[in-house]
Image 1 (cartoon, rainbow, N blue to C red):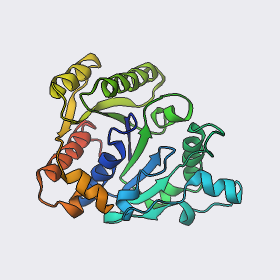
Image 2: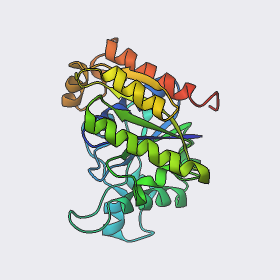
Image 3: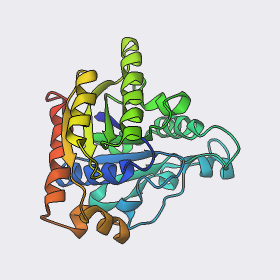
Length: 254
């Protein structure tokens, strides 16, 4: 089992790309589980026809610790992908990172990985801040590789650099290593150059590029993946290339 964490600032298209990468991997014959680690709890909605799943934190809060089962928190999505949402606190109360910690600990206690036997687990993690619970998927025993999504926009590159720096700072502790950069274009000038420079600064590479076009917004509005709405499109091919790039970075580990 390989565990991959996908980080990126809010609004960069992280969850949309994560769902489509999960779909690409599942279509290639891998058993995939996607765990949403964003307090908005919308990470897996495109895999479930636009529906949001009840979150681990919400159900734990309502029922109490030890009263939640795998059937309550793990849902089957498109292409057989297992979907989980960590969730977040009541707005204005509590730590958002706590939902991630609670979800990952709950899945382990309930034996989710033994029951569903995924080949690949994808954590979709908000990357505006990388502290506390948000850094948990990087920690030893969780993700094997971290991938960072960015556009060429200044704030996106800045956030991506902070995430890469956090991975660098943790690597001495045996945490996850940086797998590469995913460029999700926004149509600004010199995007390829900005992503390449970011990758060079952290001794990694741009493993794939997704051009800005109408396919992803069209699929988003339908509450589905690009593979379902825009089959045989250039965007589908680019997403498949990103998924292959992620697997290639593992050096044959899968």
